Structures are given as structure tokens and as C-alpha cells.
Image 1 (tube, rainbow, N blue to C red):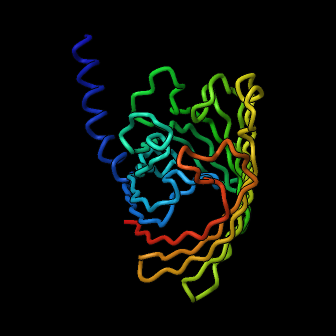
Image 2: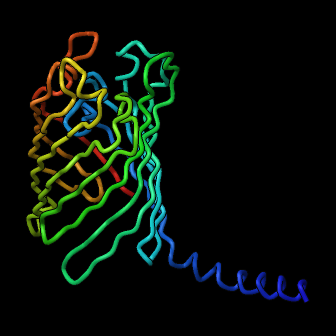
Length: 245
């Protein structure tokens, strides 16, 4: 009897997997940027970066992916690091009437030898809603956050707008974000790691190749100044070239 049940399950799986696969979409992306800014803070010491990733999405709204970028922040801080950020994530997105939503989990991985320093690896939960050309997103850290220990409850709130100009391939956008660190470690630092960032950007699609120009600035404290004396949250213009496939 058990063998018959197992055979039925195996046959059902064999017939259902092709149908499941028909609902899956695999995509990839690659970018070159003159400066890798994350939440307004340079991750490359104001130098260029190469980036790319892969995404797997299902018609149900489930998705997962991996994304990576070259970085220099850890090496600039004296940590023996691979010079790479690797992000892994999974979530679910959908829509209710005209309102879109997206919830998920994101892990930032920063391979390296940290010694007594707190690892930069970070786990976040996130939720976002969108309507027409505007969206809002809240990210919530589950523990150590980008090298600040015991920072559970740290949040990043962002508001975004993107307006495509019809029949031109051009889109203009605006962004505001607020990074708020929580915990005794953050409270005890001489320079607060909390800050706000702002960005204006324009992109142009050339048959799948997207060229972008953005200006970003923050009110970050000297906490975001590296050992070489570079202010990583200063106002800067960033050029980008990206391709999604």
C-alpha cells in the first residue's frame, strides 16, 4: 500500500512540475556605475563598480534572487575582505485593486575576515506599497546591521516616485530615505549612524540598454568617513549603464 501511495505522489509530481515550470520566469541584469551608492552612502569609496544578478519569479507572485556588486568599504576600513557584496532575497508581490504590495526577506552578505569587528552581514524584512507613480517601503533589521552590533529594530523608510514620459523611453524620478539605527551600540557612538538621503534621477532606454544620471546627497555624520578621509555620504552625480535580460 505504501509503495502504491508513493507511486501516486511521484506520478502527480511528474505531471505537475512541467505546469509549474511554465509559470516560472528567469531574468538577469548587469550594470556599470560610476559610484555604487546604497541608501546614499558610497560602497566603493566613490569609485566605479560592476553589478549584476539573477531573478526567479512565479506567476503566483513568489520570487527569489541573488545580486552582487564590487565594493571597497570593508577593505577601506582595514578589514580583509573579498571586495564583494552578495545579496540573497525572497518574497511575494501582488496587487489589490490599484495598489501594489511587496513583502520579503533580504540578506546582505559581505565575505571577509573581521577579527574582533562586527560582521557587516545583515538580515532585513521589508514591506512596500505602490500606487500609480509613487511607492513607499519600510525595511526592518533583525540584528547586527551593516557592522553596528545589536541593532535589531533599525529601519530604513523610503519614498519613491518615477514618472515615465510617454513615447520617449525617458523616466524621471525622485527619492527620499531615512535610515534610523536602534540599540545601545548605535546610541553610544560619538557620531550617529542615522541619517537621511535624497536623490533625483533621469533614465533613457536605448533598445534595452538603459543610461542613467542621478544626483544624490545625505546629511550623514562623520561616521560615514572612511580611513582615507573620503566622505561617503557627500553629494555626488552618478552615471550608470544597465541591461536587463
